[in-house]
Length: 88
Image 1 (tube, one colour):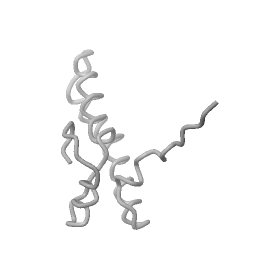
Image 2: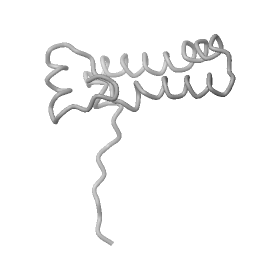
Image 3: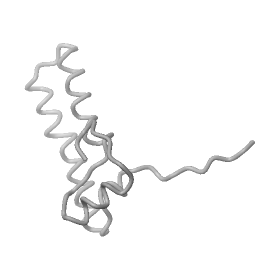
């Protein structure tokens, strides 16, 4: 699924079964949001690009590598565990 494009239940699994790598929106969107906020705050674009290259890219690469090593999709690996609601 593309960033900011919601998908139905099972869409990521269907894409992954076809060899498409899927990442959760909070992973793919955070770089753009962070980068644009920095530029809007006056940080030079070259500094933002350097930050993305040296900090954000390695984190995403590690997510992909860890998923491959464990045989788990990046969507599953990056997604927080489901919480159970408990009644007080």
